[in-house]
Amino acid sequence: MFRQLTAGAAMLASLAVAAPAQASPLPTPDEMMIINVVNANGSGCPDKSAKITVSPDNTAFTVTYSDYTAQVGPESSPLDFRKNCQIALDIKVPSGFTFAIAGADYRGYASLAKGAWAQEAANYYFQGHSQTTRIEHNFKGPFDDNWQRTDKVGIASLSFLSCGERRYLNINTDLRVNRGSSDARKHTSFISMDSTDASINTVYRVAWKKCF
Image (tube, rainbow, N blue to C red; front, side, top):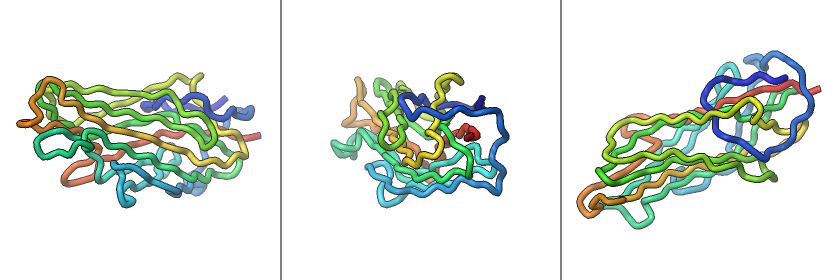
């Protein structure tokens, strides 16, 4: 059996098949995950602007974006309506354990004119395996506020990297804005995973399993 975190989850599917496991404690804080960013590409995370930290109890890691905004409006370029970021992570787990991404909490800010709409979406996959089902969250204008969205997945849907395997974890997110019926010649609409005074964190929850 494995231990599932109850926090929000991003849908995962078609990942590696896990080895049999039994009930076991989480890794201790001195058995930390070590996460290295192998690559970060996309208009939403230019110039290594995505930063990653690991929680003290090994149950989550956080990706901090500092330059991730999609927008339409009189001062926007034709390509600004969509921003994306694909991060490849080399995750070294404590000896004798494997893991799955059990959830994701997304936070940001959006300002949408009446008639405009925006979307946040993400998928996750281990290197060499198929991408997961795309999970989307839509926002409808008028809207001007902080936002938070949480994806949930049942215990039977968690998929673990096979014990002993070493594969990069790819996280692919994107933001987009559509002017809809709003007048983009007069009004700017945007959605972001950043802010003017501090970065917005995206937290990915981790479920652990003991290998035998």
